[in-house]
Length: 437
Image 1 (tube, rainbow, N blue to C red):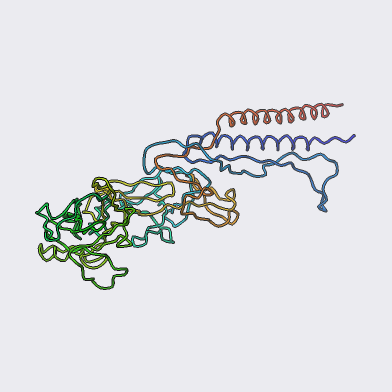
Image 2 (tube, rainbow, N blue to C red):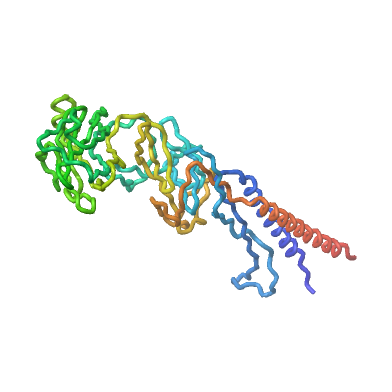
């Protein structure tokens, strides 16, 4: 019977080395258990068999021990912890944030701990800049190229009223006004009802627009308007405006037997502010429907046999106002809010994923680089569940299960001890053979 001491020593030593490497992986997982967005690793081992010089495998069936085959990354979801900080961002799903280092490297991370640097750019603790897609102010759509996200902290410029709306019910039981009485906003006998709203010129100046409703006949009403007491023209809006249309002093509204507006069909009127501009010397607007004009939607007005009531009114102009804060939506849209209540979509944070995330190369600080093994980045600009959703004011904890790691540590320790015993036993046998006389 042949005896080989070297093989047994090598097998035991390989087991010690494997157990040591396994313990190193476990120790790394445990040491990062409290790190935001950390993803654990797992050691994979394989057995080792000898080959002959001609490349044929050994047929004796006894291997040469074990070796570390790979250390794979576990990208399972970590728990979400609410923090309340709007720049703490957690991903629920498989996506990654993309940040750009100072050297231009694109780094992918699950660590959503971001802040603003002194220039107002969103960065992480290393100064890497979060990448997002700026929103085009004209179209409201994100651009196609990701770049650094600069959060503007200045005031929003004013905007002139470009459209208004009024929802109300006119009392069908009201008495028609005597046609001999000319409309006069100071004479209550020349109209049936009125309401008012604030409109804004292009410098953000606020003006009171009063709207007066006058019943001319059954199902037939006239609409008059004044701005800061000056009567302005209001009439039916043309289908398409190429030049400033001629406007009548008042607009006509006609209702059907069901109480719904029939004329104009669209319910859209045009308010021409030219008389107000001439009287006050204040320019109103140079953009919009036409200079000094805006649309006025009355399509949701009704005429029922019940009291006059205003259900809703509003317009889209506003005054200049200071920055109030920002928020990030589930789709990654960063929205700026201002003290006047205006919300502006500023940039959209994209989520990235890879065909093979296990192929990403770890670079430390909870970051990975794309490699040929990972495949190219794929980006989503919507709340696509395949990529995940973003939760603002929260962070993803590491996905380390400390109980499981401690159990694995005990197992690795026992494996180490068992392999040590193999070497010890083999050494004892070898010593016995050496002492034969």
